[in-house]
Amino acid sequence: MQPGKPFIASTVVLALLVGSILLALSTEARAAPPLGVNYENGNGMDQLNCDGGNTAQIAADMAHLKSIGVKWIRIEASTTAESGLLKSPACPKLAPFQGLRNMLKGIESAQAKPVIILLVDHYDSAARAPYLAWLEQVLAEAPESAVFEVGDEENLSQSTEGYKGAPPGGYPYGWRFNAADFGASDRVGMCPKDSTKAADLDGAVASYVAWLADSYAAIKAKRPHATVMIGGLSSWQAQCWTEKLGQHGAYRHADAIAYHAYGATPNEAVAALDAFQPIVKSWPKHLDIWITEFGFTTGSGASRVATEQLKASELAETYRLLARRVSSPILYYTAREWPLTTAQWKQQCGYGPCVLDKPGSNPGHIPGTERDASGSGLFEQLDGHLIEEPAEKAFGAATRAP
Image (tube, rainbow, N blue to C red; front, side, top):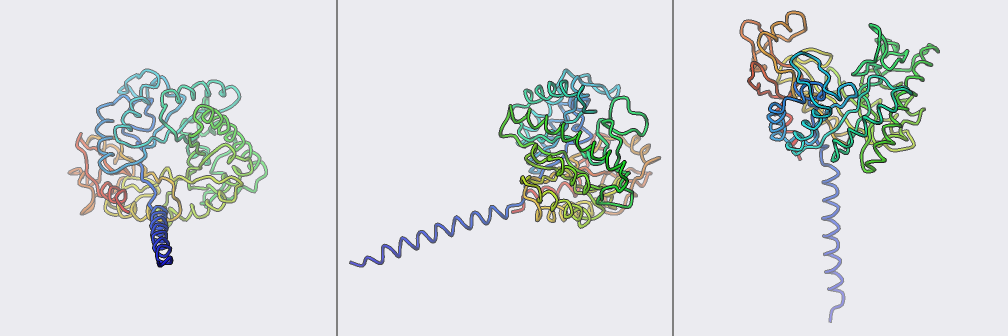
């Protein structure tokens, strides 16, 4: 009889088992964050207004997004759009929430999950009851949805919806504060030294946190497992706003915070995130950080690049840099641009910044205009034809990366 051998064998088996578990955990820990997209312009954001009625386009786009491995799709729901508010004569007048139903059905067909941005045109004591009634309807229409983002780039004081009765150049929500008050040269957004502006900023943050708190309580009452996010903060001048969110205890009313990582280069896109993360990590309650927007465009804007190849390269590199910093989903902005005709693009290039078509750039070149019919979209349409882009392939490769 050799009593040591069974013990040794058992120890070896146990060691192998533990080793396998640790390897699996290590592999899981190294897993890349899931990639998603914003479904913007063509048929996404403002989907309750107009584009949510284009079910044929939604179906085609969702099939396309499924084919490139999209895991999350970010859409908007706004109080002013609940009844199919028209934005142009071409928009169908939808029944209340029909656009949201169409979008959610499409997202389900893509085997992806929705991120629903909640938007209001203003929030005060008079708006509270109508907003909460609307939010209850949104939850009823989206019974499987579990991720909600409250607001969008509110640190810029530029609500997507604007606010009722705003004079030209007026502040949204009635706040007497604007990101320009920080000073145009300050990218990260140090708090203003002017005591009047500081008071206005404090009031603006308090107003947002009240909206966030009401949204959080309403969503959690119906859906305790849901993730409620502080709406995506613009990387432009985010520092002071984020500090103020902490002072007002915004973290008590959220499970996560969304951030928009933009910049002229991949390194610039993550530089502001590096300043933002320590503030969030200093809060008493841990909040996951989601990147709900990042991207580059060959059309116009601050994150403009020269060619589609460069856009694809920057997309891949930025994703790699972001993935080293966050483990939550990372969403590209955007899946598509407005479907255009040649005539529309020529007109747009007549008064807007359009990039010269270069060798090896987007195949959607418009003869006679020397223009590249591209923006930030992974795929776009020109004259009814889908334009295949390198960025789409780069995105697909990233979704398949180990």
